[in-house]
Image (cartoon, rainbow over all chains, first blue to last red; front, top):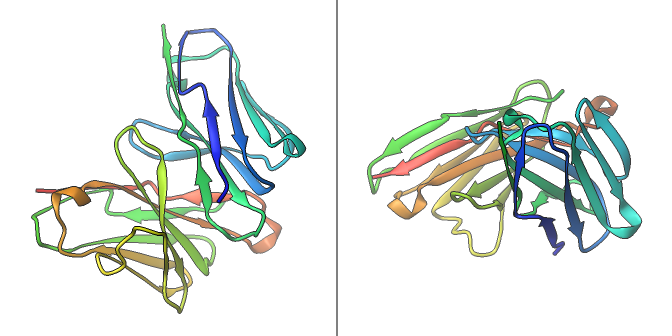
Length: 110
Length: 118
């Protein structure tokens, strides 16, 4: 099956700093999503981005499908950005489940 | 966007009892739903694919007799943890995708159920 690798596993930032999270995947995908898991466990969908670039406020994401990677950019980080960020992909056969990477744990201190 | 509701959010049960977790798609129909399990500080592991009107498909290593899945309608899938043991304690999350209306939001997740078996 598809392998999803995220880096770095942990990231510690001061408030206001910028960061880049990376997701590599081993095969062609039909879908890629970035999630933020809050302290209560809820998965918040940040981006649905099988290809291209999207921006939402301080967050943006880019997926280069031909090179099998995606990047999540967080600018001017805030303490509320802390948590675990997951990248998840859906194999080329649509309708199959999302496969998750191991996540990046982000800690932002004031 | 699509909304998936999951209940209960938290449950504590005694060893040997069974617990049922519900997953509902609130504003769309879902012929397929997915169940995941998450251990502390770990990633989400797919347990099974729930198919409306037919048997669920379980991932390798998941005991189908322990984790019973029923998908009796287009908006409801249930996961029953039977004869629960402390090692079944975990965070369980369901997911579905709205394919109708030309929407393209990807997969949506329920809020999860934290199961503690004592």
